[in-house]
Length: 382
Image (cartoon, rainbow, N blue to C red; front, top):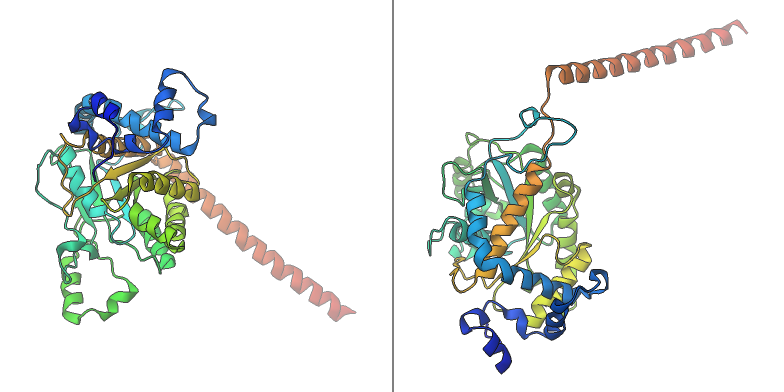
């Protein structure tokens, strides 16, 4: 999408930087630029100004910060960002060998495109698509499976990203139930995700899908979740007076299963060239307002995804840095949410407490029976 910049903007910013700094052509940007000269009261800023300041922050550190963030992710080992608390040593924590980041969202929200972006930004793989998108054809059933991705393309990578099957806006109850099972039981590669509407598929297709799904893959516990939302789809529905998609997104984002994993899931807003610059910011504000979160806390815009998720880092370093920072934030959340590992004493106390509870229930039941028999005997005497 081309931006309509003034001549002064063109003088201040080179043409190569005009494309990815799309917000500089929006209204209120001059007010945001003036705020750079002082230290305004953050609480008095409007949501639009806060979003503009956040986008400016990403643009300011994207060029020099991207390589540094890539290096941190490349050298990351599970538990590196754990903060010692309460005198507990790191060796006493229950830290998995690989941190698992789960992408969830509704159909066509851009999860597979986001995985491709991660490969391009973090793995430096160039223009080679790895995760198949919904444009792969009408008989493409790859979205029926969980897909585990090592986006760093390294044998020593300390984290992996799972691409899940998209949910249906009309079946939010089924979506929350399936999400709860993923967060409780864990996920594994090629895990089959069948839905109630899949009964219309041919029997041969279902059998082929079942044979491809295997429980031999390692089951991974989900450590952090990213909610991927197609901002263009939700915003255009809102403009047409339909809030069903936004309400379904709110139920997914605020579901107890996600909140139990991390209090504030990371929100990724994906969109292509379907929205104007003003609509991008307005859509972000409306979605965050309905979700009950701040517009700049754990919210990232992934701008202009192509059909296969290609990203030329030189032309859009802001998006590249936003993707890397989102992964970095997910690892921080994961490492700070680990619990101490269970010791023999802990298991002994747990079993003993359950045994005492069981004995208490048994004796309470016997007491009720004896009381009833005593009352009946008294009645017979009278």
